[in-house]
Amino acid sequence: MLQQKLKSSIITEPDFRQMDVNPDWLQYSIDQHAIEEELQRIQKKHRQLVEVEDVRNGDSVTLNLTSEEKKYNRENLTISIGLGLFSKELEEQLIGRRSQEAVDLNVQGHEVHVQMVSIVRSVIPPWTDAMAAEERIDGVSTLEELKTHIKEQMRDNLIALNMYYLINNVNRQMAKKGKYHLIQEDLDLLIDMELERVRLMAQSDGLVLEEMTEEQFQGRIPVNSYEEFLNMIISLNQTKLPVLLIAMKHAEEDHFTPTAEGYEEYIANMVESFPGLDIEEVRQRLDFDNYASQEYLEYFNEKVRTYYTTQLQEV
Amino acid sequence: MAIHTATSDNYEELVKEGFVIVDFYTDTCVPCKTFSKILDAIEFEIPFVNIVKVNATQYPDLGEKHRILGTPTTFFYKDGELLERHVGVIPTDQLKEKIGSYMY
Image (cartoon, rainbow over all chains, first blue to last red; front, side):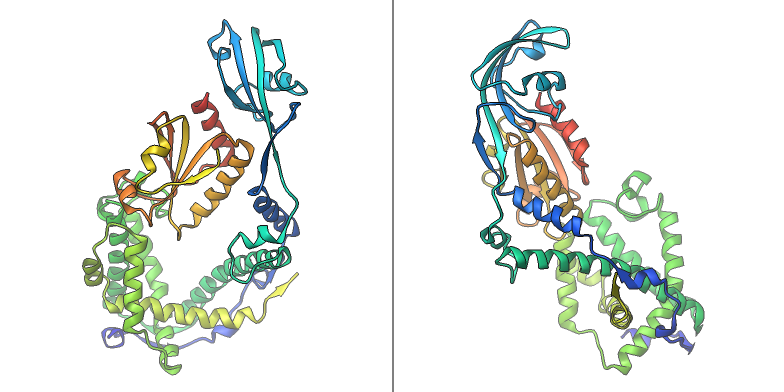
């Protein structure tokens, strides 16, 4: 049991409700334009391709090109007008041309004979409730419900981001403003737990944590070497240990205990998220205490989140 | 051409002809969702591009066979030949440039 293993203790605990928090983290505003953009993205998935007679910007045009220049000597070439992926100059000269038309053009100094084959345009149909239903979102079967869902999702994301910064800040203040009797042995235990977790994740990627190069750290962990990573973990755990002590105290007072079922779920999630890991090895290396330490911290974070969420305002 | 969903059985068939973009993703990966939206936009603008999506959680054998170590991973094929593999989200403009250079 983690409680028996840890010898550190709290001397004085500050009140998490009394921390100095940035007022910006307690406000959020929903961008109406972003909602419209998301609706348009969904609407575009239902576009229909229709054959048309004249070329406009954005159309997909299939052509036969004849030229002494290899690039412009192609059959059944399909290009998207206006993107400039094949030849911007050619694309511009095709606007207004008609299906089946044949024309001689000069493209970047080359004589090119163009035979238009077909012109296809994307047409976005008007919104229907069926399109909203096709998104297969629980409780969403109409456009209005979809709009509400998108707005709620955006609000939840903004709040989650604000709360992430707020909780980290509150935890740092809790560690700094409280008084604790911290034992090095406990710090070492938390550092080892963290290292073991990251070692497993590295192993899933076919890497050995202690041997990872700057390039291998890139995109995974914001450090350039294992030594730098170790220093980061040591520094983070100096804040983590006092917060864990507080979290465990709150959990005990509130009768919260991490469960064996929760542990099994955690192990299963690890194996699913990091393919290539053997479940028995994961269970051996990430013991129950490792899981419990995270559960206690999350339990306390949730208490902080619940308290400060009540003070949130939409502006 | 639209977006196709690959399985262990049809993968080779889907990539063997023409220019194909393959997106290896997992359900829980947040950058994969961002990249998926980029691919939706590309598919709208360039409807004749072939896009194949592979759920690496659902088909771990495909992930293992193609040595997928992180998601999203994107493969660019031309007539069955793998031209490039890229790990991470590719911004829209960069993706268009790659399509232009490989397709034509």
